Image (cartoon, rainbow, N blue to C red; front, side, top):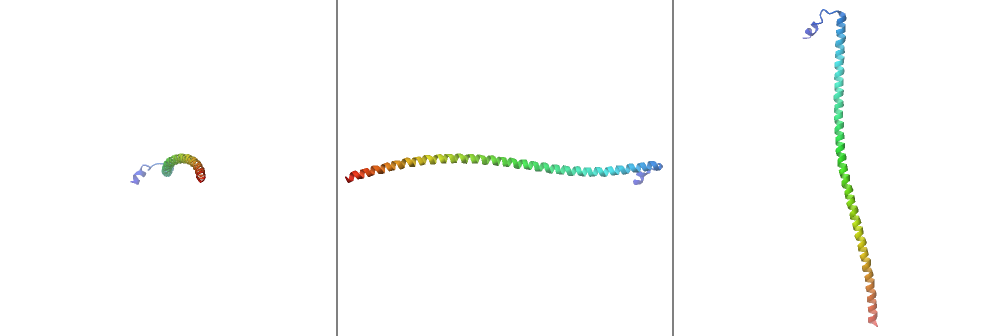
Length: 120
């Protein structure tokens, strides 16, 4: 089959044949260059796809961390409210203990007075 491809060149001058040879060489060179660029393009597209996946993965991880952070902030708020309630309850109970302690001391004094009256 290659003889048919070359057959059309028969009878052409050496100068024209030289020019055809140069053009064919240039075509081959351009084909190789095109293949290299196609390979580079495919490589870059693969790298881009990988980067897109990485970015998407990081976005998902960021969203998860934001939700976790929000959850932890809510938990902290709830714990702070519980702490304040417990602190308030403690103050109320300490106040009640002080009142009862005062009442106890008063009762003890009353008992002592009554005991002294009984002795008399």
